[in-house]
Length: 308
Ligand code: NAP
Image (cartoon, rainbow, N blue to C red; front, side, top):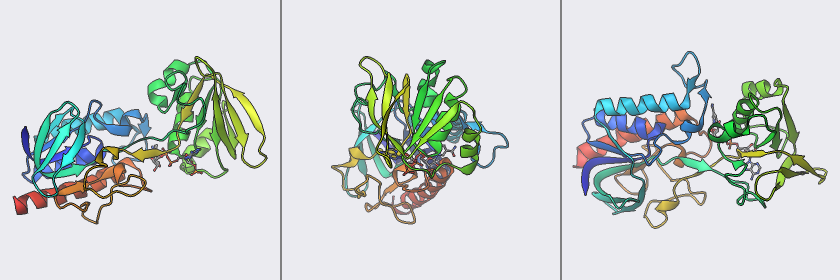
């Protein structure tokens, strides 16, 4: 069993920021970051809105820098994925999927969020065979092919712009006419000749047996259905908090899975804090995650230094 003052679950911007603040307050801090530490930013090409960078910074580069910064300050980052948390007061016992256990006086849950799927016919069967939730990871396999992107947020638009660099035709399918994506990004897509949009439309079915051959797209206003031929369907319809593993724990969550926190990022259990996308309904931005992570790090460090 590994002993620590603070265990941070998640090595995305929230977890790293929390760890940086805690370790600098003299608190022994370990991050359990899972097999792919870095979270959703690892799937982001360029960030243009993370303050402090004159030019766009790559998501991977930003996370790599945060991990190096954590390590330089003395934070240990492990590849453990925490699957269980026990205890209603400190110390808490945390168990990883490997069986490894930690005893921590305080915990920060910064487990992030993961892709939401459409839940339509054909989607599950063809995941990894043309259906993907990560254009950055899988886009390369669709070079020279026609693809569809589903969604109207920043992820969908950035995915469409990324894919348009090497796919001859990218069709963005969105269920209404308004977009959640930034105006600047929407404008870039509108000015990209090989991106077209099917608005007020939903994907009703993913077509194909062995691999994706197209999508059945229904116009929600006219109810008309068309078959759109394509080799890839990139689903970018938002994210769900990665908190299902907390179901048998006393940590309070919303029905959506979001962890409830107060202004100090404290959960209902004293000594357990949470930050980042697993607590955030509306502002799922890297910089917001880093900000709430900082708040959780400061709060957790104060808790450890006061009560331990
Ligand atoms: P999002 O902003 O929640 O957008 C999800 C989109 O999917 C919405 O347009 C939504 O439609 C649509 N949608 C949801 N469920 C659907 C369903 N079942 N069927 C069809 N469409 C569905 O998610 P996101 O684009 O992943 O972005 C998440 C957060 O990360 C946002 O805060 C975003 O700004 C941020 N982000 C930032 C950057 C950046 O700044 N570089 C890049 C990527 C993401 P409605 O609009 O009709 O609800």
